[in-house]
Length: 122
Image (cartoon, rainbow, N blue to C red; front, side):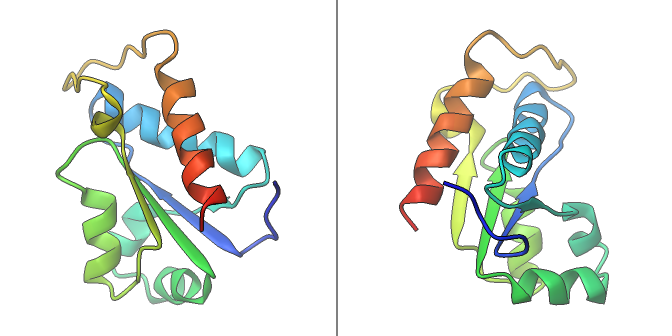
């Protein structure tokens, strides 16, 4: 499955933990695979109107958060952007380790596969 450019906007967390880094890495991989376009979550939080307008124009909006604090999802919703799909790394059974960035074998692939599955269902 590939996506037309601009159709799916991907907004990952890139927080200060292993789970934030997994979320960011998943966004990069999905973009490299042509499943969407990674966008700047911090730009949404900074209320950059051009970025907000771009996100609102997307057919699908995917938020990928490292944990249940859901910063990416909440930033999008606060800016009035409807989140089509939300993935939370800790919901996939990965323990968050703040200020430690080690990603264990198989963790990235687990979340990547779950996210691909979620995208194929919408």
